[in-house]
Length: 332
Image (cartoon, rainbow, N blue to C red; front, side, top):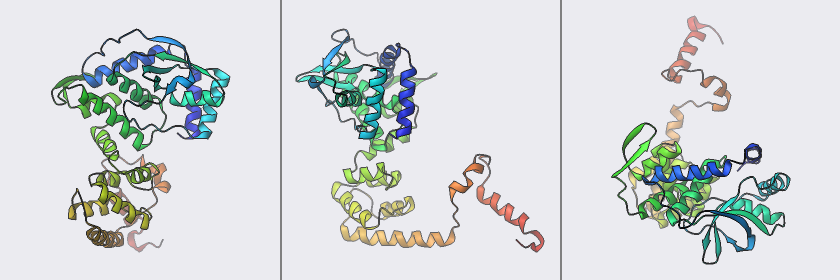
């Protein structure tokens, strides 16, 4: 999370009332019902709030949810905020064999450790795996100001896996999405609840099938996300070949190039020699396309783009400008 985004988030948290904890619980209940098509099963015991020794807490292990810890700089900022304003929101845990599993609040625990605190206020939840996954993912997806593609992908995947483990058929569940009542697939339910497109869910989940170096490249914006999605359909060996080639090319691959490679050599695998051959072909094709195209920096035109109606073609608009500008042989 960027420093400025975290600072804004901390200010918002400090301004919220004491009803926030109840709001979080309501949100989790709504999420469970929306995602699983039924009300959350009653907990084994009622929620208990108490001070817990930090040494008894351990990270969430029920499912890989992929949320990355704060950087040291952001963690220090959070620690300073807790020192000044206290813990605005309790962490959530559930009992485990070796203490308590953190469902929500990994960074708050780390910040309290940084402050030298030995205990932290926690809501102890007595919930099953499915509800634990919902708490662990929904609270982060709804509250974090910015998330990496891999973080969203792993969170969506954890929810989908939890849904499937419920033993329900993903294509025959009646769901509610706003005022629309119809049967939704699991992926559609996740998209509906979080207000994103189904393709966004599908694509970000596909990223979790990338080998770690390629997934890191997507997070660091070195590799185009859509190229990462396309590569994710190849097996591990082929992905390693892509990684090696991308390192050589400094991650220089366009969506058009990736489409051409995938068309000539579809998944799941490509021999090394064949990948080198088709890569060179795609580079040549890309270079030829550039000769026929005129490109401009979007940054310079950004202040004006929102004023262009969606039904107006920018190329036609620019051509009209040139025709008017140089009408009757007028000099520039």
